[in-house]
Amino acid sequence: MRAGRDAPLMRPLDMTFAGALVAGPSGLEPRPLAIAGGVIADAPAGREIRLEGCTLLPGIVDLHGDGFERHLAPRRGLVSDLARGLVALDAELAASGITTAVLAQFWSWEGGMRSPDFARRLAAALEEARPRLLTEMVLQLRLETHLTDQFGEVADFVERHRIGYAVYNDHLPHAALRKGRTPPRLTGQALKSGRSPEAHLALIRELAARDPEVPGALAELSARLGAMGVRLGSHDDPDPARRAQMRALGCGIAEFPETMEAVRAAKAAGDAVILGAPNVVRGGSHAGKMDARAAVAEGLCDALVSDYHYPAPSAAAAALAPGGGAGAWHLVSEGPARVMGWSDRGRLAPGLRADLAILGPSGDVEATVSAGRIAFARGAVAAALFG
Image (cartoon, rainbow, N blue to C red; front, side, top):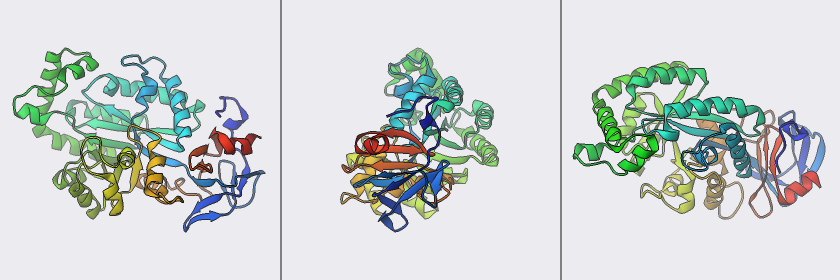
């Protein structure tokens, strides 16, 4: 159930949930949980809601998701009302138990929805849509490392839109170029970018030729972003050497390392490691890379994220705790909040944001409360709330 823009449910509610198991420091506890004024209260508040058989967990903090693209462009090239698409995304996030979502938006040479122009449009649309949203959405900027001539513009964009998280990635097909081969999927990429295959290949070659200047340009950009308080990360580090290079640039977050060696090197150096929840759900990487479950088992993962599928974080937490209970839920709530330094969410404690994912008796998300507002409700929980 969703609330309209001017409906009372857009305002924080005061209520006390009783009869449910509640996630606490020592695990699940049978105790009441009250919310008032958008935060978790330390005393009963409002009316009592009985939720026997349910489990109250912190709302999911999703540090990397790009599944939003299908809401903004239901067909390739069909991108019109971005604000309306964000409202639809808001509904899916809430239905998945996600209360804070980091939208991973490219600033890339790849064109289309990965272009700088689209990044500008999305940032503007998000600011326009925020009054209509129940979940909290923020942008992550995924910057292609070889766009060195645009780094000044990138820094200005980050500052203008108060973006607090940027990640470096490099999608250039270096191996194919070194061998003199035509890069894979060239024609499809060219069409998506609006270029001819010949023009697209020429651009790729020109960008790859910037290899010598990239480290210095990234160092300058990192210093500027770091001075703004932006958290920096790197994407798809293949090995410890690449992770060390990124760490030297101030990238303390390793996002989707490709090998266990890279993961272990990151954690040994004190870096935060972010892995894909879909990898956990599938039981391995769809691209044949490292198995996220193995990293979790070694205690090497700080956060699991939706990547391309928003229902995946809650499903991954359940898969890692087949016996039920809070299990690995900290990897989708408290862990991600700690990575970003967000001390106001990720746990159920007095004074923190009233962000809750409520699991029904079946173990599925049946309600989501975001900053004290009911963002989603169905089934038994909806009946308790509105019956």
